[in-house]
Image (cartoon, rainbow, N blue to C red):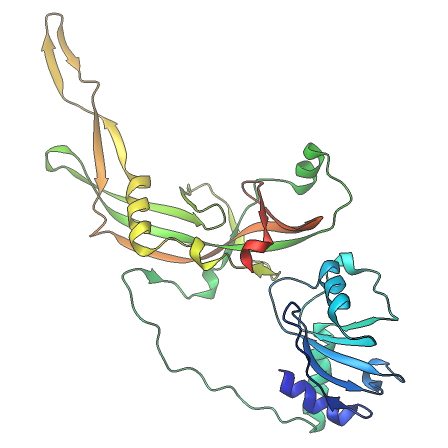
Length: 312
């Protein structure tokens, strides 16, 4: 993306020149320096131009403050593929100008239409993913969101928290469809089906009942959990076996002086995990990105806060 931006800036800017600077703590990438960038209303003066590559989270005030401390002196034009968090308002227009993702897209699109840039089709990757024992649905119609179990206004009121910004987002999770046989005592068996939610944010499995409401996923920002939060295949099968296992009151009886009494012993019914059919697809959990001194994720089903530091 940086190469495309440099090519177009060299055409559209006054006295554009590429530059490079090492800023390991910043997510903004240096693009170049120009005397003027008329397309974005920067008419005169030395302008340092940066690129904010696409990421899950928006640009925050704390991110801009860190950038300002480390960046060279001058006016900074940031061409962003990320939205801007509301805590950035108002931006000091004597120091920064952030060009939104929509503006960047329209700017590049107009250059393609005018013939200044040439568009090409990205070739499809012909490599098929490696197969494994656990099937994955790729059907986009399966992309749904669970209903929230908390109301953010009630949540904040009960904690006496006020004056923070929030924006809705979706937290990625998985639904596992399991069908197989439960084996009981004396060789008895019973067929069963289960819908299980794997919530990587709290790292637990739970059975979802038929009454659980699901809706089509809205088109808002979503976030993936750390890869290590997903259960491994072996651990997943172990945990599924535990969660669907049942203990039932036995039907056996025994004779006593007073007559026949039903046994109070509980019999274990265990899933044949090796013969079970296990499939999964992606689902989303509602949540919010909130700013309480630092950015946090509010989980929409358990009401817990998760630190974004763990996602970096």
